[in-house]
Image (cartoon, rainbow, N blue to C red):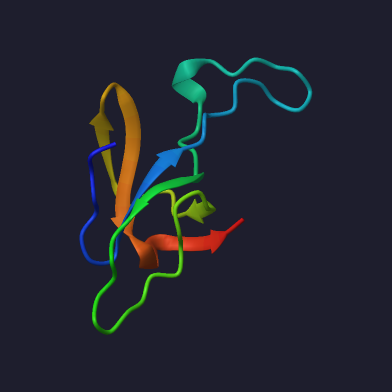
Length: 89
């Protein structure tokens, strides 16, 4: 992948949306919720005041309306500030 986020930005590949419920009911495409977790693909270098905490390969939780959706090479990604990430799983 030839993308390098700048400053305190992080590139995340969202996890797949749930296909069915725990009881086995299949969820149609129009009812699926936007995933709120994913895998860190690339990390910026940080700023002079803020050192980056997350690293490539981390599984993270982020806000439902955080970041910007982008599409690269046919794949969906999210790019967001590190401060939009709630936790490392």
